[in-house]
Amino acid sequence: MQIFRTNLTPGMTVLLVVLAILFAAIIIPLLLIAGFVWLVCNAITGCSPLELYLRRKARRRPSFAQDDFEQDEIHETAASGDDTIECEVISARTFDENGQEIR
Image (tube, rainbow, N blue to C red; front, top):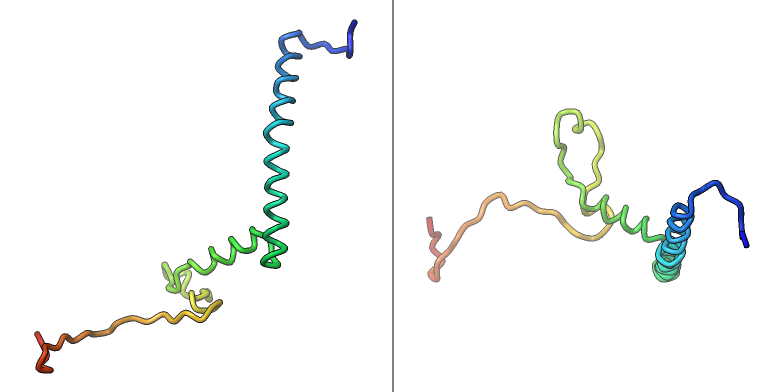
């Protein structure tokens, strides 16, 4: 009894059936888990995980220009999206117990 007509060899038919079972057993559950994680993240944070990733990536960009062409562009600083303060130490002095500066 023949279930369906095909011009494939029996070996190719078996290979296609095995690949279909692997697809159904591995890929589809992974997609369902990813969809569930997306729904939970969207319910908790109000935005998708991709948007959270892109925000975090934008926060990590350097605030200084890499070369002459990028100096004209406006760069986001790390403090633009939150309350962190970036500072740079210009000079530092060390004092001993008596208040005298150590050189």
